[in-house]
Length: 192
Image (tube, rainbow, N blue to C red; front, side, top):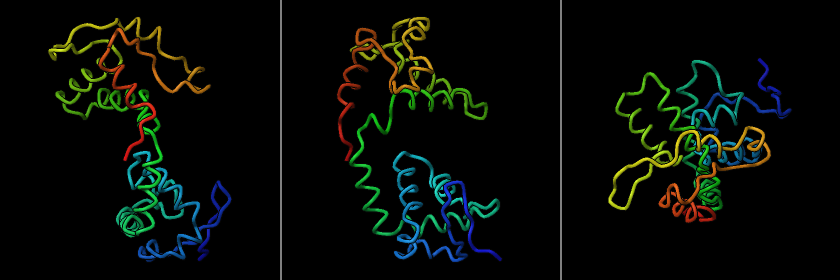
């Protein structure tokens, strides 16, 4: 049986059946690019099973979830992984890790998921409304109308603008002063 597979990135990854090989430093050095991809996916918050499948497609076999998770456990238990993860996480700003459009997308996933409980969906709608300025929370903690959805959509970047690098939905500070202050504090702030 051929133990190597060339994938789309044109690198060879040898298949080792023993999951413990992922705690071996020689394995990491041999496949540094894949290990780096795994860490980067994890820093971005991608689940360990998806990150592993994306970084190590050779090991992403249908029905092999238990073995894949064993490999992840060995990999994430290494000193190298722990140090590398912490180093890369500390180097990211809050905005890099959690831009407004990502937050909006995650809330929309909850709202549109028919398997999600009604209370979770309602809470996600409320959070999304505050995030986008549709509603605001005043100093007393009361929710009131902010700007209209029509105003929100007028100020939202187009797909073309997003493709050119617009990373955030513009929310006027007057529409939601608390969100504006939080956004100012988060932009450029390093996470520890």
